Image (tube, rainbow, N blue to C red; front, side, top):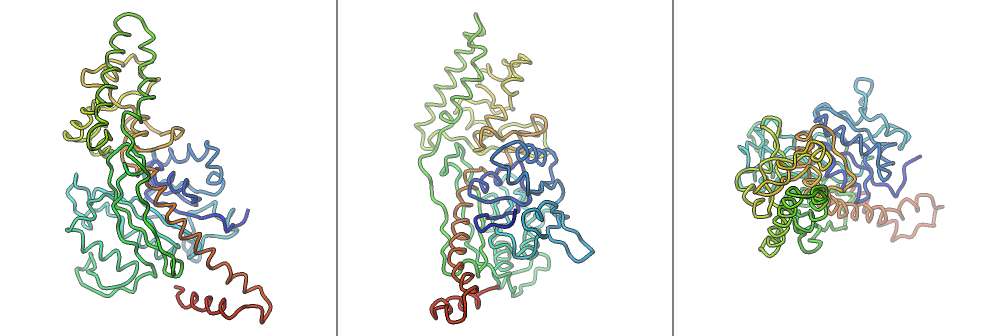
Amino acid sequence: MGPSDDVLTSIEICAGAGGQAIGLHEAGFKHLALVEIDPHAAETLRINIGSLKEWSWEKEYCDVISGDVNNFSPIPVDEGRKSDLQKVQRYLGKPLARGDLDLLAGGVPCPPFSHAGKQLGKDDERDLFPRILELTDELLPKAVMIENVRGIKDVKFEEYRTYIKARLEGGWATHPATGIEQDFDGLGYEVCEWEVLEASDFGVPQLRPRAVLVAIREDVLGDIKFVWPTATGSPRSVFRALEQSMDLRFAPYLAMSGDVARLAEKRLGRWKEQAQKAESRKDFGVAPTLVGGSKKHGGADLGPSRAKAAWALLGVSGVGVANSHDESVKKASQDRDLFRESGPMLTVEQAAIIQGFPDNWKFSGGKTAQYRQVGNAFPPPVAAAVGKAIADVLRAARERDRPKADAQGSLPGQVSSALADGADNRESARV
């Protein structure tokens, strides 16, 4: 198979368990590489790409790379450095080259900018903005998409945001390493600003604001306007999102006789009453932000005290994560998982519903590793909305530039002056 004008290619770094990758896939992008340092998350990507029919293109052409993105090498450099991409030649018929890629995306680590952390920004060793800027320079993709927590929009990070923008489109900024202000040449992009998108506006039953930066190469954007996605409808409540899965979890115990069945009926009824009641609140009964945590902290739970209190109003206990439906029945752990006075705990599968993952997406590793993958993810519906907006621009640019390509195959004298002028104008804007 060779390259097709209908295919939009992407590479994603810090891919996690695939939240952003799923959304971009839905938006029409085909992934050439997904790079993730966590081995459990990388295995999650491999399992789903290898087993789901809708990911058959990626099964053939996408490399899932488990390793540090700082060591990721997408393009070969002479004989001294080979590309980490093994499958791309099957599609392109050659190694990936600068300018071939449509989209470089990444949900770079959020702790450097999170309100829940120390907000060290550029001084945090986990800050990977410099790396995604290096990869942008190396790959020169048509578009770049970077996701982070809304904390990066805080006033204290204005200077750093200015630097990122200057690196992409040029201009004066203070270099974070030297503290010296300088005039950057830029990489030929137009930055479409940082936009904070609320996940609940896109059908995700969770309050999860995320800052997204989109930059598009100037020669691609031209006279086309990038339009940020808008809310897709009314927020979806936790009750509507989890009602079916809660019914399934309680069903085995409701089918039993005696005290177990009566307790199950009581606890399920109480959860439904509280979750339904929450729909009348001003937040429409959506969940607080899921917190994935890190390996430096203990077992998984649903967040700090304030988050646990919000979950309690939804009839859910936030002190931990329940065993899966099958495991709970097998281990007879219903008293811990379902029958607490404070309400049932969520399973990993239910947390994934709250995050917007599709039902058929499976997670690798133990329960805590799986929950962290879910809790740290970018909600797929939000990624899909932004991805579709980017894809609209890229497809419109292809359509706009198509006459130029057709004209190159024409005989002398067959190209109209207006078409020739348009081609000249586009060529003068090319990076």
